Length: 169
Image 1: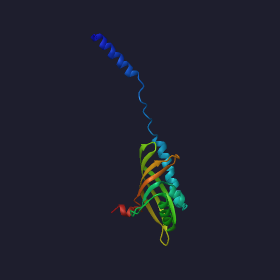
Image 2: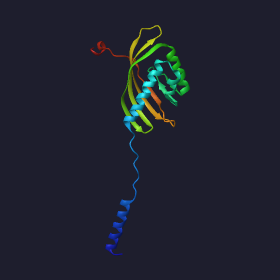
Image 3: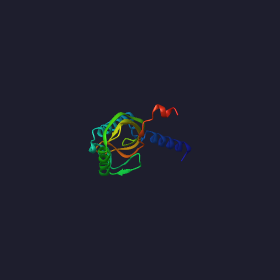
Image 4: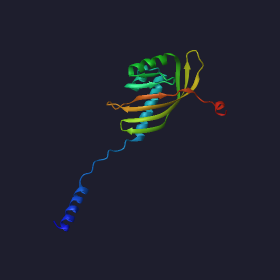
């Protein structure tokens, strides 16, 4: 085989490779759309707490979801979360949300995301004066087969809202 034939075969092979169909890169998930949906889910959760809708609180989580409270108590599974939500809501007169915001969103895929968010709210516990509180929250979200985003893992760090007097120290 002559060198000109080798060059010609190599050129044909290179051309065939270049013309071959390339694997399709899937589109990147729409972070803005996911942020919008998760922001709405957070607002719906706040509304569920305000209206003491135990079923809606539990339905925010996946069937095997985990809800970790600020005192490190941990509840796994929607049935267990429902009982924890009922116990919490039975212990308060009311819960009023002032603000719920996503501070940071990490889109893992079109069906998984992580949010770092916070809620400012007023809690009226039975027999106690109302207190302003802030709850920083980390959530790992999964989009179910039904198309609904639910929390698979949540960690709360709730506490009294910082006042100007505390900040100035």
